[in-house]
Image (cartoon, rainbow over all chains, first blue to last red):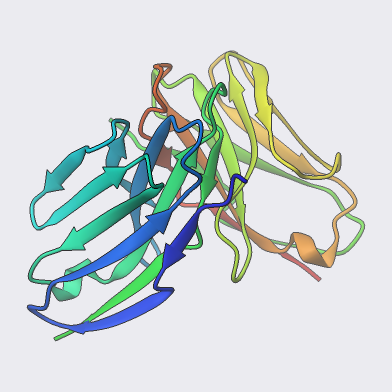
Length: 113
Length: 114
């Protein structure tokens, strides 16, 4: 019931390509969804905190949308660069808790120069 | 502002031993959460501490415990280590606000159990 699923598991794209991946979660009792970028040998870094159905957030070439009614969020990267290579995680906040999150297993993105 | 720090960064233990990991949050952050990552698994929530109290606990056996001190620093302890406890342990701190605030992660402690 609380599982968060991400697809695809991994992705290889050429530099300059645009790409997107999906985070699926139970649509009932939604509270918040977070996206994180995790580069090798570094700590996960927050990209977006999304709370409202229809939310669209953008940071540079990266953007995300949220559909709480159908239980999914998309992360888009426009014009991928080698420095975008990382694992992208989404996490669902469990309602009525402080900061208890369920994380997906991530999408590993490799951008080939 | 200094980030989240974790010590030690690497640790090797043998089965049956116990281990204590430490996490120092960003100054002003009162919530500290702990996660375990094993190969092929996403980050698994262990527990969260807020103002020295455990606020939430994930689905882990009682061998996993933690505490938080008055300065918000947190420790987690694993007793009677098993091979399956080999993992990367991450802590994350956040401000005490509602709506699931942004989590700031430390670099992690890599635990190997032999």
